[in-house]
Amino acid sequence: MQFTPYTNPTAFHSATYDLLMQHEAQNIIPLGNIIIGHKGEDKTGWRNPANWFMATVSNSTGILLTAIMTPPHNVALYATDNVINHAAIACMISGMADTPIPGVLAEKTLAETFAKAYTATKGMKYEVAMDQRIYELTEVNLQIPKIGTLRLLEERDMPFFPYWDSAFGAAGVYGTKTLQEPSDIDLYRYHLDTQKVYILEVDGIPVTMSGFSRAMQNVIGVGRVYTPPYYRGNGYATSCVAQVSQIALDKGFAKCVLYTDLANPTSNSIYQKIGYKPICDSYMLKFSLLESR
Image (tube, rainbow, N blue to C red):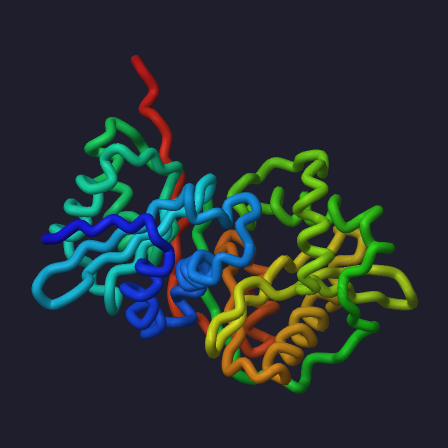
């Protein structure tokens, strides 16, 4: 087994891009990261490749395991063709021995296999931060009612958008589960400037948001779905996601991809009604030290 670390994002892009593209929808997170690093246009926050961990494990047949971590986020792993090789996992763990990682994000079996091996070598434990399912959509269900008016996030939304975004994170999408006072002005300005977040208004009142995340060659991520409790149960989120998904398809993307929390049966049901179909289950696992006795 050969462990190969990378410090140059362009070199990592060259080595792994075509491989990850074989399962483009499943790999939307690591693909999005290596594209960001390769382009080098945005180095704000976690997007600065100087702080990243990038590596592959290979043998005579080629790359078996790919890893990328953009601190403070978890390391994202992909086993080529979803074939788990225990020797490759052991080699990766050995190669990253001096690199602290907060957790792992990967296809469910790979994530758990890696977590068991990694925590055993570190005297740590792991727990599920989020049990996820990855869905993809190629056609929006035309029976979904078109409700309200959909528009891009604007400056006039800043009195409430940070609070919606914080509540979205607290709902578990980032694995935080903790509602925090919005304070990251640069983050909210970033969402405003990139024009990827949409607001659904009904009778002039904002009721739901959704938007795009990573844009790949053929697929684009859809997420950041949040409806304040007062407006839930009216079909607003369903309509909003359906409209946002149709915008993506109209832009020329072949597929929309989104992650859901399996602990939330409502959202999983909503997305399937829109036309999303499951392709893979994924774990976000959190590492922590064992408690001393």
